[in-house]
Length: 325
Image 1 (cartoon, rainbow, N blue to C red):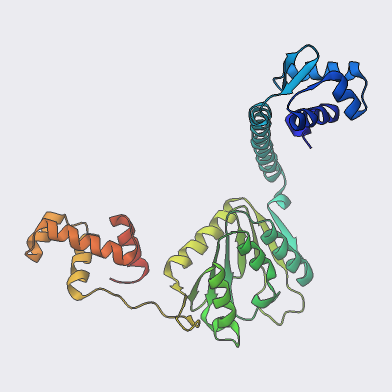
Image 2 (image 1 turned 120 degrees about the vertical axis):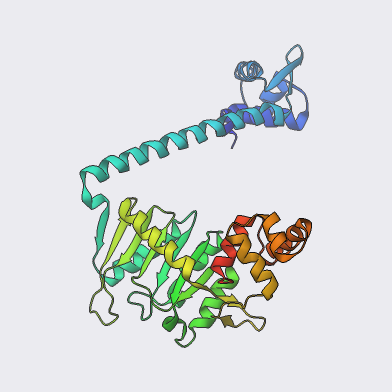
């Protein structure tokens, strides 16, 4: 068990025996563990050289504090593993880059049928670490949202999901309840009238793009796309739709709302916000509104609180996303 800290099985047995006894002699340890005295003494001296034991008298030894003696070794081993992991990641990225340049099939792989597409969808979600983003169009061709249990498992691991749904899909029986369940688990969901493609992108490293649009197609196909400018373009496409999409929210009764929350600001605050977003300085805003700069700053702080923003830039971004202006 303590091999990771650099102890052999015999040394671990001796160390555990010393910890339980606090102090013991060579003969006593040998009899307790069934080891020759010479082997015990040699092992104890080797452990002493590494700071694991100390002599307390002729032929007698005591253990060093485990947190000090073993903690440093484990920390060093962990650092070594971290360095090795980074080196492997760098080599893997270099390998993938070289393979992609030489072989186009390493960038885009054809997934030929419904069964293979379902398997890939599960696989990329099971291996997701950072984020999953997806377009969900009406009339699924591979699996329904209810069948995607890989998402539930990933959400349970803490993997963020951002999903954009077509409105027509949300009007199908049971779909709103299914989306509401996902939102409660942490999924961020939005809706748009129409989506151009079906796709799922994972960790900005791999994506699955369905290459058919008709649910009645006898056998759909898809493209598995790995890190490339093509994947970057799909990510940019997702982000552009995400900015324009309507957030989906859970109402107090647990139902899903497909409508944007109405603007909570009055006409005076909206006018102030419009000046702020236009880049008008606080002094000029105060002059136009006939109030002091301190009052302007106080009202801006109120607007930031309404938007849940920490900076004025975040306030402007939130106002644009929620269509306050």
